Image (cartoon, rainbow, N blue to C red; front, side):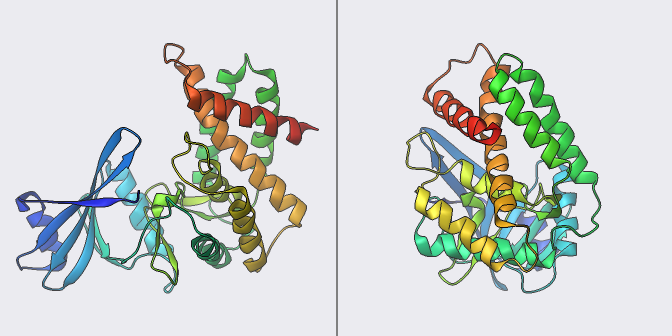
Length: 297
């Protein structure tokens, strides 16, 4: 099931922010929600119907994330597949409303459109150019801490060391930082990438790996995407890139990025030994170990 809306009966808490960005006028608001298994999520993201039009209001729980999103949008050229920003105010932003569905349930068409959008952004910020490495270095340092969790898993430790070594050399591009299918809106013609609060210049394969790693046909995955569609996604991105590495390098970089995502899940359980190891742990662990063997062979 895709994200859905809950009507907000009292909009007074949003009035000051809406007024400061959109101007005066009565408006209605609906909150975006989502269900992941038994978990019901209510986001600080609202559909606003205002006399000026229909918009998205997003409230940030941390000022640095708001600043990151504002900085990313300031870098983006026009006509890229991202919503148009109307304005920022304090810890909130308003963008245009994109009519469409997220990609929790995949079709071949939306997979191809998503790949085209990822490639568009990579082409606007070609991997290999001389970008500021501040965000990339933070991401590398963050991941380096995971190695300590893998001391009892020698296979995963060796493979993750391989990933970290490659991450230090991998060309950078502007990355979303949280490119999962619910952060993609498909209007039937184009897929728009939203939620750039974790964005910045990062190794180019990270967004691709994150998009792929948590999608599958097994029930533990939050998103539905089959193996054929995963291949299609990678093929379409590679075909559309103006500047690209050898295909073997691209494929290996993406596999390393997928390993990173799977180990992220595994390491959470390893860091929390009192947490029961459920089916999610075993599926991600088995996948990570199988991929580790392939990468090390």
